[in-house]
Image (cartoon, rainbow, N blue to C red; front, side, top):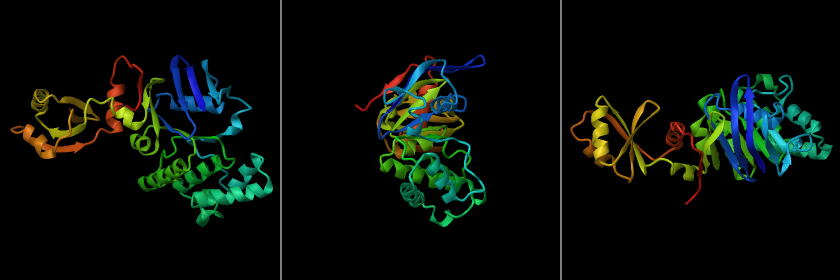
Amino acid sequence: MICFENVKKTLGDRAVLDDLSFSVESGDVYGLLGANGAGKTTAFNILCGLLEADAGSVLFEGEEIGERTKDRFGIVPQEISLYRDLTCAENLRFFAEVYGLRRARKKERVEELIGLFKLEEYAQTEIAKLSGGWQRRIHIAVGLVHSPALLVLDEPTAGLDVEARYDLWERIAELKRMGVTILLTTHQLEEAERLCSRIGILQEGRIVAQGSLEALRAVVPAAEVAVVETEEEDAVCARAAAMGWVCRRYGGRLNLLMPTETTLGNCVDALHGIRLMSVALQPVRLEHVYMEVTRRDDMEFLECRES
């Protein structure tokens, strides 16, 4: 559906995008995951027509993006771009008119979106009087008003508190269940893990790994991970090496990558005689994948497929 092919972009003296290539297929929820400065917003701006690529191409259903394709996208930028003195319903009606919906279809579509995003209570409330979480809901609803082929979300939950973030995740998950094709950019590992059917990990303007979550987990040389808190890390690492486990430091924590599943008791027994403050077992998660692929000096591209 949408395909970035060897896209390059330099801003000042910095190569922000370096041969960026990925594709989003119909029905995908594709997450472009990366730290701040990785190039997510630049890719978003090129897709939206706000920036022009220096090289490469962005194709929508085989056609270069431009005037003929722009109405096929529903663009939801990170910054809220609603009319603050209008109500939720008035914003939806206004943008429906902008996209040329006929009167009967406009009324029907506004009612559909108010129901889908559970906006009934606030439909006649001015945007300025709503919390950030409710504004985000309406923002996404506006992006869908013309029934686009592709919904593009730039950091959809940035700046939201925990409750509002989880609530918006449920709304996006509902769109996923409905088969809406979504490209979202995010720096939040949990967001990508919860919502995305496929994930591309972006580092320094390039995709360094991509695939389904299940396929990406295969990048980590482990069936299970033990997170250990101790003041005797050298002793733990030596014992782990003797057991055939791999030591990694992810996010400031010592992680033991174990090739087979085990129990917490067996793990503690294996570290007998070493002073341990805490030990916790967890499955391989996206955070482990992210740290594993972004720590590689060669930054080789990993196309992760289901076995």
